[in-house]
Amino acid sequence: MDAIAAERAALDFVMSELQRQNGMWGQANERVDVSNGELFQAGVGQLDAVFDRRNDDKTAFDEPPQIYPENWTGFRSYGGDFANIGVGVTFLIQEMKRLAMNGEDLTRLSRRPDQTYNPETGLPKVITA
Image 1: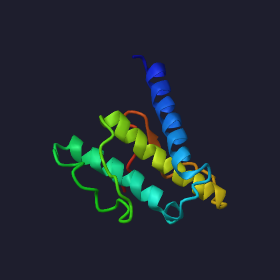
Image 2 (image 1 turned 180 degrees about the vertical axis):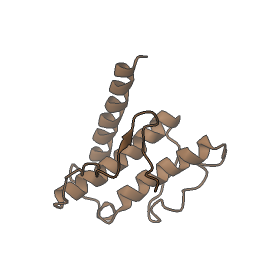
Image 3 (image 1 turned 45 degrees about the vertical axis):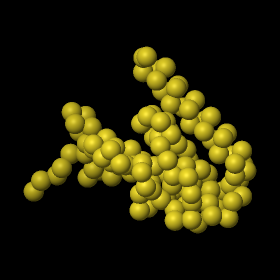
Image 4 (image 1 turned 90 degrees about the vertical axis):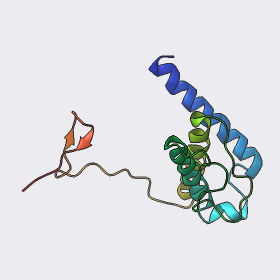
């Protein structure tokens, strides 16, 4: 699969998962427990388990990570890393939607002059004295 098709597959997965979650919780996430950061916690928890599995933890999905919402049930693996990352990202998009609906500032700040970009590494250059 080329890069464009892979990008499309990722976006299609997330859009499909958004529809699934909206069907469960409503378009505006009407569940009471999703209004206090639980979607953020669930997303980070899902990604935490993927991270652990990628670091050879065979039990990564046996129990919810500590950050996963205490009052949520059903923590599980949704399949491979692609699916689990997609579900985690979708939880985070739902949290972003909640923040936007609550008036959160949507501005993305630019890099400061002292945070120069190093294209060789993709990381900001470290400024040494």
